[in-house]
Image (cartoon, rainbow, N blue to C red; front, side, top):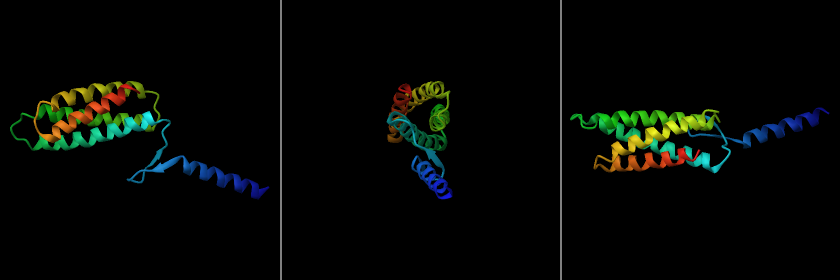
Length: 137
């Protein structure tokens, strides 16, 4: 009987390990329920990376012309991070959080499009992709 319980415990542990994965920063991330969730998280993470890059570039611009862009990039990063967290936590508020993220991403994309730098153009593209995926959630 003890062996049977031990076998079930091992099987349960293996099953639990198989349904979780470790991210690059050693956090355990639960498997998502659909490819749509994964695509949205990937798009939000790409948006976060682009916005952070542009935000840094804007902060170094001493003319002040990019102050609004810097502000909107910060807001977009915050919204996308919140969206990723809601999806990985399977939050019941995910839909409303994603809707807010769409608004922030679209504003940021519009602002980034005003500038000719390649990083700004890439940021606008990534923001629109995140907004598109968040709309589908």
